[in-house]
Length: 204
Image 1 (tube, one colour):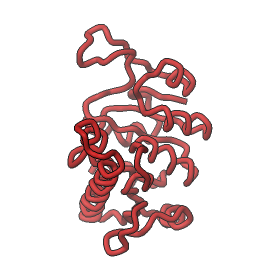
Image 2 (image 1 turned 90 degrees about the vertical axis):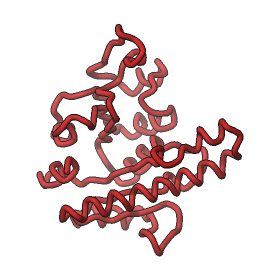
Image 3 (image 1 turned 45 degrees about the horizontal axis):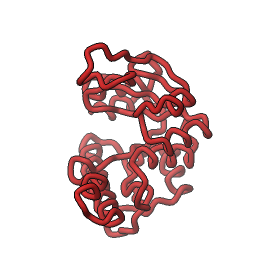
């Protein structure tokens, strides 16, 4: 419903990158001894499962969507083709990108930055689960953690702030893509972030 509220404004073209951590984390499996490429491909499949679930949820609300995947599963979803994705967005559909980049060793963060650059997106809304912005240290374990209202891409990279991995941060910097980090669990925050209201942390 939160995504639909932003969509119903009619002001934005919306693409969504979904992760698969609720089902499978490739990096965790790799740390436990599984071969990294296989672990990452399983993670990509998990993101496709979530993409299909989100597509179904949005369509049940009357929102036209397209799920596109970087892994070739034509019986399940459209293959990701840049021009087709842009065409779907221009037709007013929400496009859900599953399957990561289609390559192991790349995170969902990198997928977000890559797809944003490919389709010409101006902003990445990085919706976090229970975290309301970027801090100088982990706010869950440090009571004196300071939240940043605004940062530059350079500061994120130079300070090693764990907003997203360095590959993704560098892609956003090189392509002038703004990032807004905010708590998705607060009602109305997705629409506020899309409208440019000052919530969370803005990186530009």
